[in-house]
Image (tube, rainbow, N blue to C red; front, side, top):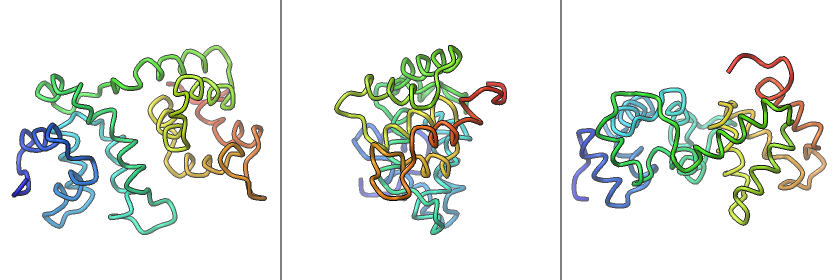
Length: 191
């Protein structure tokens, strides 16, 4: 693409041409307004809910803090809304909150299982069964983010859970359950 898209329709077309979230975020922020401009574009062009689009503020291009997310994490977190399978929704959106197609069923399963009393490690096992070989730390975090809106800093801490992290500071199953308790455990806030 020779020029930077200007309208929501041009951003949608760029996505259909195969350009990813990272390229789109760079293009959307090219006016110097950084994450704010990128969030506005992602909300208006793709119907990404504002609370999800806020992950752009954590992207390492806009945030140099300890909770900055990588290009891969940005792609994984935004892919559900950027999927070309959703293109029929893109033109109908005015910032409406839509469930992502790729994980809609998994999100519903996770929410039902939480309501049935399963804890974080049980739910992680559900994600692992669902994703099979595609079960990675990034997809694990994306599933919990979409299902329960767990904050990015908490999800980054969860990356130290023992299936992925062998260090002395790794999280046990009990640690993961405690970490996610405000979103998943008994007495959590309403959803």
